[in-house]
Image 1 (tube, rainbow, N blue to C red):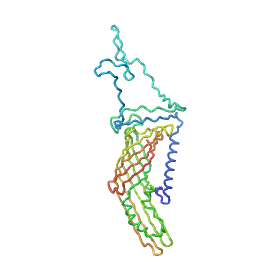
Image 2 (image 1 turned 120 degrees about the vertical axis):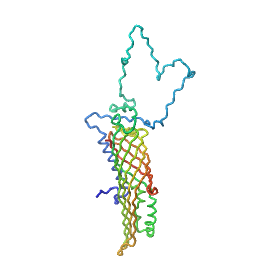
Image 3 (image 1 turned 180 degrees about the vertical axis):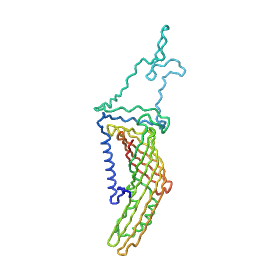
Image 4 (image 1 turned 120 degrees about the horizontal axis):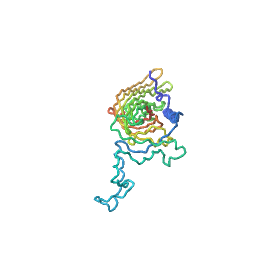
Length: 374
């Protein structure tokens, strides 16, 4: 027997559920930061500086081109006079080789000593404790194609997602059924003896359509990842109200399972997993992304109710059930924030376009997840 998803516990109010989700999320982030952002004591602990924002991959075509330097006045294209030396074009060094001397050795290496590379940070980072910061690693050349091995450990990797999705679907057909059957029955209660039952419309208004999902994905390039996931949710709203010898029972049950495949495009590159000195540096290292993909799901719902009069029994009863296959296209925006060298936090919002019964299942979805890099 499957475990009941506690976020759908009908004994909890919507505000209690929202508070519970917020506390669990905050506690999880705290534990990750407390365990993943500390040195392990076996090596010197170093932080990383966030890289500047630059368009990556095919998105570089949208970057603004630097303006060209204007030609000096009086200069002509046909002029053969050598230009004055500048920083961009240093003067050529001419040397005379004595006629009796030996010819220069073409295979000999350069005699000028190359300057030593240094990792000194700019003055603005030279604050107390700045010796623990390390400069961003040098960028590598573009790879020739997708699905190839990267140049270093931060190029290609698998990751695991675990999170929640809050749905806000249209429910037009469901609303019509409730107006026709339930609202007509409740209209007979002219003296308002009974409370209004909690229905799918109330769950939608209170953002109570919550599902849990688990995903597996891979970073293929600096600007592209793909994800496959499996999500589920089940629960119900139970309403029982009794006044003297009259009682009303209205019950709703929900079950949904879905799976999908999406791609994420990072115009400014995927955020680097590293240990950053502060949350300000983590947010500067975070990056937005575009998501799109396809999803298939199965939903099953049931609503039933009756009016009972003691000792006669049920004097009115009604029921309705649905079973639908869902095929949909997703498109949306998201943001990913690195936490340490293994964990990151992502949030996204997407709109679901259903190919079957869009008037019922089209809508917005907000997703929050913790991502672990293998």
